[in-house]
Amino acid sequence: MGFIVKVGGTSLGVETVKTVDFEVDTPMDSNAKTTDMGVTMTITGKVLTILDDGTEETVDLALWSMVPAEKADCYRTVTVDVVSAGQVVRNYELKNAFVVEYDEVYGDTEGVGTFKLVVRQKKDKLKDVTINGGYSN
Image 1: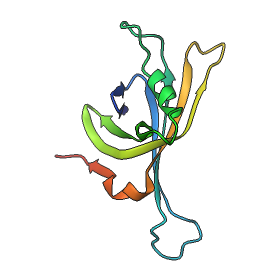
Image 2 (image 1 turned 90 degrees about the vertical axis):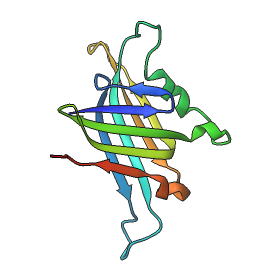
Image 3 (image 1 turned 180 degrees about the vertical axis):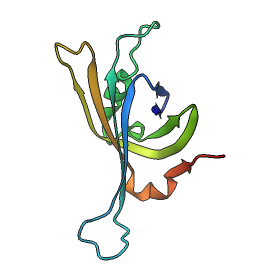
């Protein structure tokens, strides 16, 4: 199983992305369905070496994480395809996502770094989240 993640114009492939966690949050003290919900995705992967064109895929994620809330560009479309045996099993799209947390960790033994990107859909745009998928026979 692998993942293809697109954030704006940046595309991260199966060799970069290691895990994706899609979560729908509702308050723990709720006794009925509530309108106070949130959709959060946590994406982890490797910070790889520089590509042939002189770029590194995850640097755009780090830069996006520092865009202030006053700028419209702090909201971006995040698309995740979950791929198994060459087939898209699930497709998630958050059309107005913003960065909640971004971390990069480097060690002296692994040779590559790791990143963790936590994004959340803008609360008043929850209806714009799309989820598609399922195996077809």
